[in-house]
Length: 383
Image (cartoon, rainbow, N blue to C red):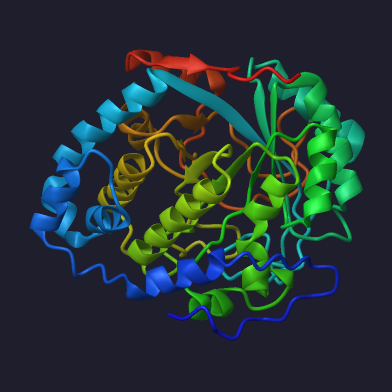
């Protein structure tokens, strides 16, 4: 895999930063063969005080399967060392499901025949009030990728409303330019999530049939632009199951590692979404990424970047999520709705995918306490 691949051309208005990180990711993944590490390599990685990229690659390989228990023991110790027993709680709020992209794995696909809707500012405020009433202090605002419907000014107003009620406000919207991230940061946004979906550039074009999301490098550089725009935290993820999940997990870790080195003050977070059924494709599944493989990736992330946060989403079943926060995850969603509306007023539009864990905040809180862990609603004071 080369950095010199042919990608969809930049569209008008897209900022080019060309920091060189994309090329280093593609070169690194191109050299990574998941079948190459041996059990000896895995054992060496588990004995290292600080893991190298080669160690990380070994822990992601099939050779690590017999070592999952040892990985879990060390990951749990690292989690306790850096995060104690804290589990940060948050919930997403979907503002709009209008989208210009045609992503084959997504319910918001522009070609899908779904109920489209967008919350106005009064509806957003009612939704936020209902979420705040649960005690949550961290909200993640999401939209489909349609600038013409959910413009930066609209997102900014939603962020301002959220910042009045919540200690932490995140955004998961289409990739933005540096000045746009700076604007949303000034409105009150603290962190941003932009997931690459797959780092395989050939597969990337196959699953992104049309729309601005086809521009691979613009999406990949989004975390850098967000940090340059003042965001203090950025999240990384591949949608596991779209391509070779081991290579995508390696690329995600390498991407986060390179950003951490370039921006040492940045707070780094991982998410691990798997493919889920959605309204237009009930047969969609995560391929060969079963819970054992998902857990292996999570443990490898924890050991490779022990200071990074790891989010376990409501895509996964309750029992798995509860086990994951005990071993390695540090952030957990609760009271999740993935449709448009549904918290403070009636549902208005269809959701992005089906969730597997629909527990409310109280039930998730109780499950965390039952594991001997501490639910955390606020871990940051905005100045």
